[in-house]
Amino acid sequence: MKQFTMLFMLSFFGLALFGCQEKSSRSATNNSSLSPYCQQYPTASGCPGYNGNTTSGTGTNCSLYPTAYGCPGNTGSTSGGTTSTSFCQQNPYADGCNGSTTGATTSGSTTGGTTNPYQPVSSTPYNPNWGNKYPGGVPQGSCSTPYGPSGPANPYEVRKATMTIVGKSWYNPSSAEAPNYKNTSSLLKSVTGSKTFFMTDSMLKLRFKPKPEPEPSSSDPICFGRVSGSPIAGYTKLNFTAKVVGVRGDNSTGEEPLGTFNIGVNNCSTAIDLSSYRAQYPKGLYLVVSSVKGNKAFFPNNYNSSGFRDVNSYVDIRTSECWSMDLEVAADGTKTFD
Image 1 (tube, rainbow, N blue to C red):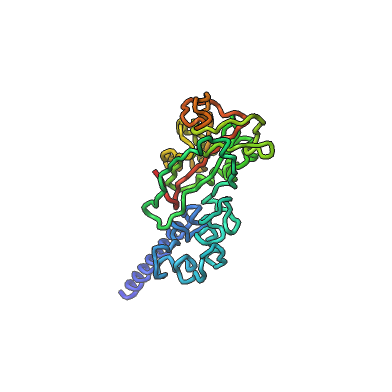
Image 2: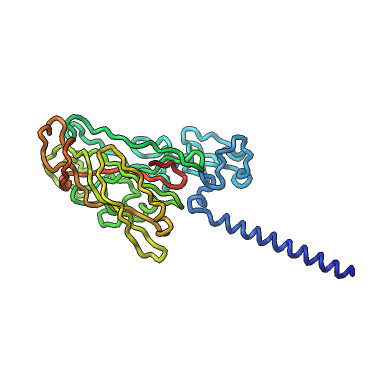
């Protein structure tokens, strides 16, 4: 009887040990299935290692990521974006670290000279001669203010990038001209970069913001491929079509038309929800903008005082001119917009 009892107890402990090992194995598997963003930056906002909600520095994540902001292992201040603490070494794109875009200068560069691939900023801006292009002043527009989504605390700002393209030509990161685009954000010059710009796990929104028309010159064409020609006042509205191109799991591509847009300079379109395409195209998305026209179909009576401000007829942008637009993206870990 004692032998039977001993065998029973040994069997019981063996099964219990196997169960613990199996549970441990499942936990390790789950930890390795984090998003690419969280795998690279585990202490970023929205990832398991983020500890921003804990003021005492004793949160459950501090044992896993002791150098996270707010945890005992983060020993240095991150003010000024010049810290070299272990936190910033592990999380170079966190607020206050060298790779952060927080407080980026008007040239689009960051304090540490590093661009965050998950939080891209615009290229170095140009400074056109607004007086010649916009009699009566540059049009004033408005955009809804991005706000923090429910979930992660202290989200990043929305991602921003700029495209600047010659008239009668469209934006396509897969084109042969794309690497040569001038005054265009680097991430928009290739399919790979564009996929990074739209990278997310679930939430993905896009909006367009036409920029004022820049003034090229013989010394600075502003946009790649621009030809010489006499200047006229700048467009105040852009009309264009857009689509996203997605890459499926088998590397085949699909196109999803987003529609035709008519937007005034310095105004934002309403949010376009692309979230459903993320699962449909697991190998990434990129944007194509085509059929871009400006509201310069005829000269109005008040051309010398207000330019094309009141014109609602559209024509192709001339090849002696450039058109420019900002893209804004809300994704996992960023603020969002409507």
